[in-house]
Picture (cartoon, rainbow, N blue to C red):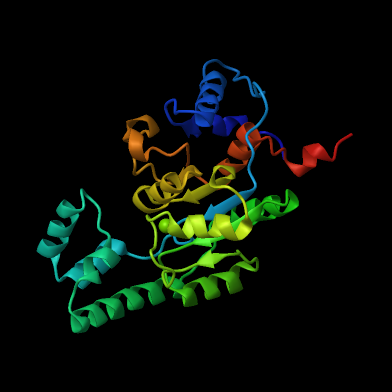
Length: 268
Ligand SMILES: [Mg+2]
């Protein structure tokens, strides 16, 4: 696979960060400073030995209507608006219902399960996911998964996807994202330090924050541009990379981690 230079303008990187990430930022700044962009590395590539993916909206096409689910769980528009305001514009529904009475909590979980089941019925694999995971396998890079969805959803996903992620942690693993615990657990299982792992996901508040807290690289999948320009994101939650499709992750892996596509490697 050739370097897809047409993708680079959409491949954005965070402002300079301390330590090792600072080198990463400088390299990307250089690669975006002129046209044609210089693609070579300055210095050795960073080390990457594991990729941890979010599931819903990252490995699968987003089909769950979260606002509708939140409204029904919380009891209407006013309660939803209040929860959004309390959460700074976003809702952590699992956290919201944690302190509820058992009966209310059971009803809430039933609603969530119904929305998730509807999502499963329409489950589609994200374009580029199979190719990316196949590529990681050729490089002997481990693949893990962390989701706030339930284990049965992960089981169905594995069945449909045809490739296993290991470990694959669902919301039965506590505490869940954005706590770094699940990511640290995976790193520990792999015996790989977090700074040689990248967390890829479509949620800033869950996936990116989890990855940053664990000390891993972070890649935000923002298909629709809903998070706005990369540089406008607050420093403390800004991912190392922002991509608009899983296909763009290839460019990140090649440019910053020295993972050349198999096709070009096989040429002599
Ligand atoms: Mg997601």
